Amino acid sequence: MTEVIRVLQADCDRRFKDEVSEFIQGQEDLYYLGALDSANHILQVIADTRPPHLVLLGLDLKPRGGGLGALKVIRERWHEDELAVVIISPPAAGESALQKAADLGANYYIQRPVGAALLARRIKQICSVNSRQVRPEVSREQVQEICREYFDSMGIPPHYKGYRYLMEGVWLAITYPPAG
Image 1: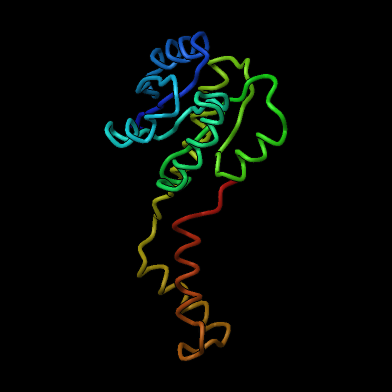
Image 2 (image 1 turned 135 degrees about the vertical axis):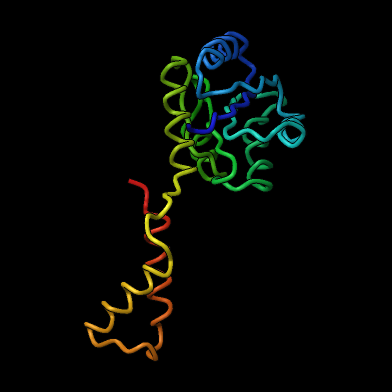
């Protein structure tokens, strides 16, 4: 059983918030934590509740520049792997605003109007990438033994500099494979 993805929304478009809320509440693998109308209390809400996995953050939040300001403050406190942020931009958002959002650490951005079903698919994709940690089917000792045998067959003795780093690198590559 997979963990349910907790989603918090901060947006000033009431119709969009209602549409997203209704759709997410109908999904069994998503949980809607609620919606905020402004950027003023977003950090407090994130810290007070069970932290969300993902925040849907409206670029046009109040007060002016609130979406980017909230993103900046979120990234000062939470890393991209801990809390994903999807920027929801209004149709007239300029490229510079979207570039600034990317520079501040947005995981993804999408422009309104967007269907709730597509948004839910993106949420699941983003959260699966952020939480992808493959449990190795072999133990660390087994990996070290295989490395020792392989290094011996290549003529690399254990006293060479970097020998332990190579083993550790192989273990990390098995434990945390690259996305894609």
